[in-house]
Length: 498
Image (cartoon, rainbow, N blue to C red; front, side, top):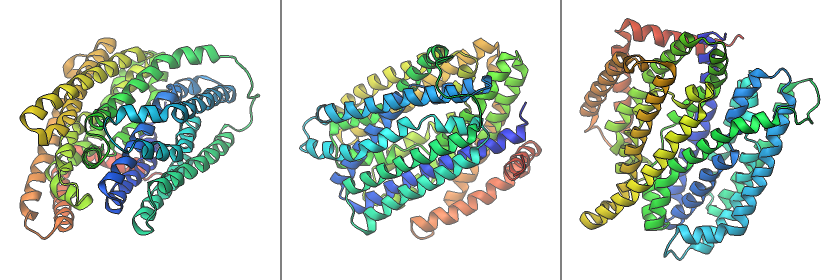
C-alpha cells in the first residue's frame, strides 16, 4: 500500500499542475475583462463555457475508468490504445457536431441576440482546442498511475503559461477574441502531441498495442461513469446556459460568468480523485474497509485545513477582491459570494468512494438529480425575481446551483454510508470541521475589521491576507492535532525521494 506521505505528495503534485492551469484561466478572465468591451467579453465567455461544458461529455468517463483498470492490468499498452482510439473518434464527432450545428445551437442558446454569426465564427477558432482536450483525455490518468505525476505537472504548468500569454496579448497587443481562441487551440494541439509522447515513454516496453482483449469490460465499466461525468458537467454549467438563454451574451452574461467561477479547490479535488480512485479500488477489492475509512478521514481533515480557511477569507474579502479583479463588473460580487457557499462541501470527496467500489451508478443518480433540480430552480427563480426584483434576476441560477449542490451531497453521503455501513457520525470528522471552520471565520472577520479602512482594494487584500495568515496560523498551531496534520502534509510535499 502506498504510504500516506507518498499519496499526499502525489496529490500535491497533481493539484499544483491543475491549479496552475486553473489560475491561468482565471487570470485570462481578469485580463480579457479589462481588454475588451463587455459585449465582446460576453461572447468570448459564451464560447469558452460551451466548449468546456461539452468536453467532459465526450470524454465518456474513460479517464476515470483508466484509473480503475490500469492498476489491475499487467500490460497497460493495449488498454491505453483502446482508450485513445475511442477518445479520438469521440473528439472527431464533437468537432463535427459543433461545425455542422454550431450556428443552430448558438441561435437557440441566445434568443434575441444579434451576435449569433459572430459567436459561430468564434467557435470555429475554438474547435481544435476542443478536439485536443478530448483526444488527449487518456494521458493524465496514464501518467498518474505510472507515477509520472511530475511530468504531468510540468505539462500543465507550460499549458497554463501559454493561456496566460493569450490573456496578455488581448490586453497589451489588442488581440481580439478570435485571435486568443486560435492561440489556445494551437497550445492544446501542442499539449496533445507532448502528452502522447510522454505516455509512450511512461509505458515503456511491453506487448503490442493492437488488441481488443478487455475492451468490452472497459466500455461496460465506463458507461455509467461517462453518463455521470456528462450529467455532472452539464450540472456545473447549466446555470450559465440559463443566464445565456434569458439574458443573451453581453454585459449581464459576462457579469454572471466572471463571478460564477469556482475557486481552484475543485482542481485539488480532481487531483485527490485521480490518486485515490486506484487506491480505493485496490482496497475494496481486498476487502479492507477499515483502510478505506482511514484514507477517507485523513483526506477530509487535510482538505478541511485548506478549504475552510480559504472559504472564510474569500467570503469576508469578496468585495475588495472582485472590485480589483473586475472593476467594471461590480455586480459579479454577489454571484461570487453565492458560489463560495459551496466551497465548504469540497472538504470531502464523494464520487471516488463510489467509483472505486464499482458503485458509479449511485454517483450518476446524484448528478442527474442535481442537474434536474438545478434547471428547475434556475428557471423558477428567474421568473420570480423578474417580477419582484428584475435587476437581481440574474442571480437566481446561482442560488439554484448552491441549493441543488447541497442536496446532491446529502444524497451521496447517504449512499456512501449505506454501502460501507458507516453511521452519520462516522461519515465525517465533524468536530474537526467545526473547530477549523469557527476559527477560520473568526480570524477572517477580525482581519477584515482591522484592514477595512487601509487604502484601496489591493492594500486591503494584501494587509488583510497577511493579518489573516498570522491569526489563523496561531490558531491552528495552538491545536496539537492540527499542528500534527500540517507537519505531516509539509513533510510529505517536501520529500522528493521516491
